[in-house]
Picture 1 (cartoon, each protein chain N blue to C red):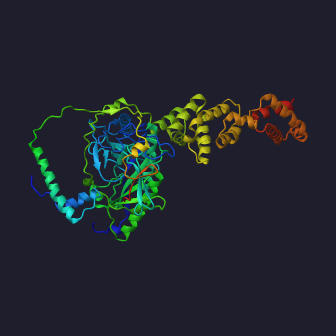
Picture 2: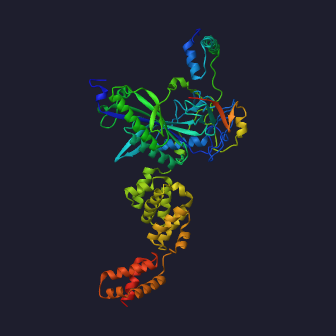
Picture 3: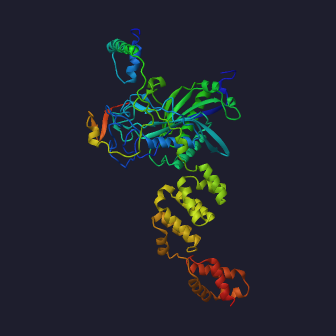
Length: 92
Length: 496
């Protein structure tokens, strides 16, 4: 596969979808890195085709309530909380 | 546009819907967390690693949600394909803890259905393109201002993972009124199926696509060519949460688009937000295009093959069929049959009463008296679900002549609803038990004794005199005497 398939505009677009702000230097850096990362995928072309091991279908569970996490446990990894809520920046 | 400019032509509206309904299951779609929201519940108290999107957690599909989807497919006369799959829809917004929503993409569980709706006197078929299963996101609170000006955001994932069915119609609606009727009918059918609870907050959410086309491009059968549809710019109106709201939001949007076109402006293809409190739609910042969602197959959920469930899972008799049966079986008129099948609970109650006593009496009592008095109090049958036995008992008291119809309607039923008491209590408190013949005999004697003039008039052949005396007996019995009995006893006594 070819190099530099990722241009600066594409990086900006992906960054916007991910809600990440990048300055121009970062855009350049990521464009190069993206190209490198995508190149690793070329290795997959060398993998021989194999069949799926099993054909699972209809994996379901009965509609029965199972105990989950307490509020404290649910919020344990949150950097910021307020009154039992996860707290984050403004979004729009 | 052809010879004539669009602004000079008569316009017709074209509307299609995406309706999200919450399915009534005990647990969320991909985990065992409860879907039952307690009143004033604490945030983030119904979560687990799956619905919080913690690393390594794996979704397992809820069989109950699939059953509900199959029932909906059956009711909409839709195809359940041999195989259906789940996809990830990627977007970054804090209501999605995983940064993607598990939904269905190119192989939805229901395809090509339809729903018949009465619009004015016309029966219309609304085509349903597809209906698919997906998970509900969590809920956000924008603190310290509106969505654009807030200081920060609070996130609650209790709702995240609630099973949703998204029902997508063809652009078959020609007016906001049609949309409202369709949504009411859809809710009715879903409630009959037992898969939906319209009283639950946020249980119905609607996005509507709406555009204007030249009226003379609409064929007589209401169909519109693909070219015409493609040529029209449409807006998508989001944040509609009821069938009334849908009619209002779309009526606003119809007027807005017509005005714009008549002023020679082009309708911008955009997403608009229905602001219920202000009664207007406002432009929303444009979101992702479809390709930006980067849909890909959800590898953690194997495909579903449930087309044979369509035969295996029974669904109850649906409103249209039941309405027809009520007319035939109980001899009801169109209006009563419609009222009595408006919800499954009303219809079940009617049948119970009709079979115990008399279909006509039951129709009067359930359709006119009970629903009428409930409506007057802004109540629904669901507000008295646990008291239906009491109402049935009241009808029984009327059927067995233990109380007069008038007292039952005007005193007992009203007090039952206003004071929350059972009929026997009202009857005892008010002394309304139907007077037995001995009591009436006593009242007859009193009436004759107290009104010698009337007795004389009776004997001289004045016809009004008997009615006057019957009235006196009724008054003494406080309405509990049977007027026919009073009349007969009076004549026997006077002619003696």
